Length: 90
Image (cartoon, rainbow, N blue to C red):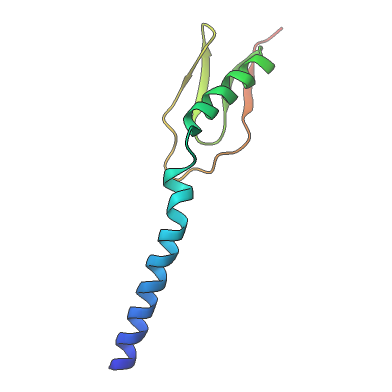
C-alpha cells in the first residue's frame, strides 16, 4: 500500500512541476506580445495589399475597407506564419 501511495504522490508532483514549467510560455507570453502581433499584421497587410483574407492558424481575418476584421483566436492553437488565403482578382 505504501508503495502505491508513494508512486501516486511522485506522479502527481511530476505532473504539477511539468505543468508549472510550461505555464509562463503558454499563458503569460512576453510583455508587449499583443503590440507585436498588431504590428506584424500591419506589416503583412502592407506587404500583401491584394490579400482579402488571411490567417495564422489561430485567427482568421478578412480585410474590409482596408481594415482587418479577425476572429477570436482558437483554443489551444499553435500560431503559424501568416498566409493569404484569398486575393483580389486582377
